[in-house]
Length: 90
Image (cartoon, rainbow, N blue to C red; front, side, top):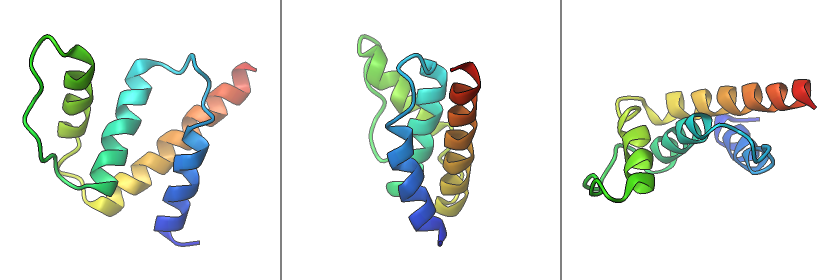
C-alpha cells in the first residue's frame, strides 16, 4: 500500500475517533490533513472573534513547512496513536 492510500485509509479511521478526543489532538490532525491535501496555508488568518477558525488556521500554519509526504506520515502516526489510546481506555 502506498503512502497516499494509507493516508486516505487513516483519514477514514480518524472519523471514528471518540467524541472525547481532545481539541488539541483534533487541531493537530486538521493541520496535518490540510498540509497533506492542500499544501502551505493559502488564506489570511481569521479575525480574533472567530476563535474556532482561527485555531484551525493556527494549527495548519504550524505545519506549513512540512512536505506533503511528511504531513501524510505524521497524520497516519497521530491517528494510530489516538486509536490506540481510545482502545486502551475503552
